[in-house]
Image 1 (spheres, rainbow, N blue to C red):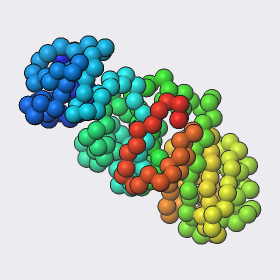
Image 2: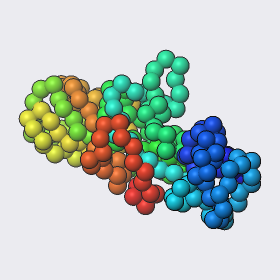
Image 3: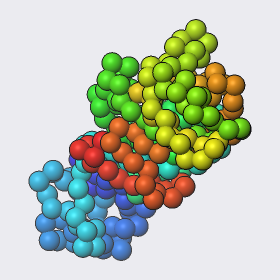
Image 4: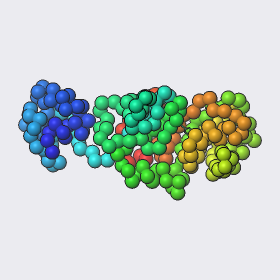
Length: 224
Ligand code: URA
């Protein structure tokens, strides 16, 4: 593979960014400074940017604390997409979001280029847990919480058992193992309430933790 293509795919920036980096003599291949974007590199070559080893990662995983106002899509003609928030250092080749958060929903969104893993995480058969911090327009009573846990009718479909934890009178953490369209909003609607704020705080083994709104962090497959 050409050096400039390799460096671009490793997240060093666009082809012109990479050209600049090479001109500044910041790249070493097997100990020797390289300035030509055209030379060919092999996977076993040791490539350094300044003193940092550049690794080619075939499979990549990143989590974002998605802000409201962005749609979960790889592209859209009219609306801002979550892809626009990904910082330069993220290797975007073949990257896509796993599942979907609504435009007005915040929180944990996983990105990967690993199709089979994404398929597994989204498969209804795998019952992958997702936890949402849910603010209701009005109080969510203990009885409402029980009702949500047992399953509610969200328009011809009864939701599978879920888990509710109280945070405040009108705030709960709701863990569901399915991912139907607008599921949490519809579940609140089923108990005669309405979501005023929604944030996903957990997905599979991943936790949002202290990741700031709009921030992106790289994770490993094992973390997921
Ligand atoms: N449920 C919803 O209603 N919206 C989301 O974004 C995620 C789950």
